[in-house]
Length: 633
Ligand code: ADP
Ligand code: MG
Image (cartoon, rainbow, N blue to C red; front, top):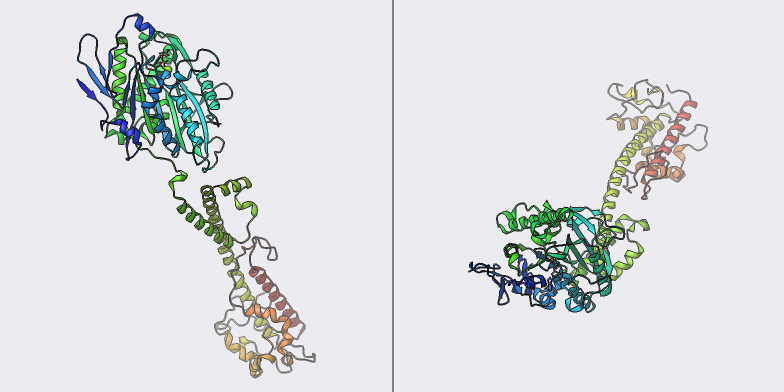
């Protein structure tokens, strides 16, 4: 006698305790359907015998050795629907889904073995005729339990449902508003495989959910063949999405975040010879068998500890794509293997039993998505405060902000105010945006600094020119001051700044003044002013060097004027002597100097522009005066 079972020998324990370790095996429960009326009429005897609650004994007709299989639970033909519901531990899965895990229940077995019956009860006896409560399947029972459970939760929960079928390798939305059309399966890193444009319906009552189930069941493809009068011709997946209201609201087209509870009613494998399928039925059967083969292949590879690390061909069929997470990913999975007791079905029954035995050795690594309960509230509050502080700091750095750019719409603010977790996310997003904006402004400011430096150089240049122009135009009763060019060789001395804007030549010595930056320029100054240079007197009586030359006919010579009389040029004086250009940060406009600055900020650039303008005026005045006087000797 051979006995196969779960690795730890007690899968029910795992089922009860939930995902404790990093790896959790797929739980398998076996259900043997009762003999059908036709089988009884033929006088068939069951070849399957339950031994205890977890072991199934197979007695092949003809006297071969018995084979035993061990599962999490084994239920014989006498078991009621309620027995199955309890033995499967679906409530435990529901609890895990409420905690944010992704849970899957799927039925597996030969066609006519009772998969659909186990999940949803017998086929409806007519349009709108409900399944009697005693015959309701795992799905209806779970729905009743879940709706009752969420009513007693402290945290409000939002429930959504989707229902699809995979028919001939095409995905059809069983809840679509119009006629179902094929939908694509996509993959991305965060969501894994998912069906695009699948309708996800929010529901709030058991009645509404039951209606969705009936709608899907009535639209699902089924046909009659020799082994089953209502044989499902497609794999059907009904998914419940459980999200706590502290999670962000669902955007249209997005699947809700949170826990999931998915019910998969697989179409049964079938031998077309046994079912007598022809034409379209045969096509459907081939498609069903192909996808089940792909599923079996993935399970085999997942069992191999070495190959599990490598590539698993989940992409081989739509079914394996959609079950990828349940089989090899982060889900918690329960398989209900269904078998027929008939000797005629023994080869398929043995195949199902071997398949199920292997499946219960497949492990997943259950992982709850980020759930609001994952972080203690104290930690959340601290994080929130930090973000708020950073937010304020960034705001103050950025100065006045466009209120529309704050990124928080009224509705979202209201939502965020209700939820600590939501606020945390809002602040994280906003801070990220503010950081970016700050960076942009900093680079604009750096640009502005560069341009300010250039302007400051220009100002200094003009200042030097103005100084020299003042010296050259120095009037007085005595002889005209000697040109600095006569003091030193024109080759060594680049002499005074250019006064003639056309020829760029010194008006005295005609030397080129293109490079006027004389290293010895300051030595000329005392000679230019003679012994009565303006620097000799007290500051209050001393006219500044940029003062306009005194007219000989004027009653008051510049030397006699008090310093206060220069107040009109005081601003200019300060501007000229000011060495440092304050980086008040407005980026320079591309247009003319007097154009308004692009960004808010200080007035350093306009100041520089004014300085330039004032200097130009001064030079112009000096030139005009210079021309109206007799040329110096
Ligand atoms: P499958 O989905 O595996 O192809 P079904 O669930 O459609 O098989 O069952 C085939 C037939 O057997 C149906 O008429 C169903 O009512 C009946 N049946 C299956 N399991 C049971 C059961 N446990 N008790 C009574 N009838 C059952
Ligand atoms: Mg079925």
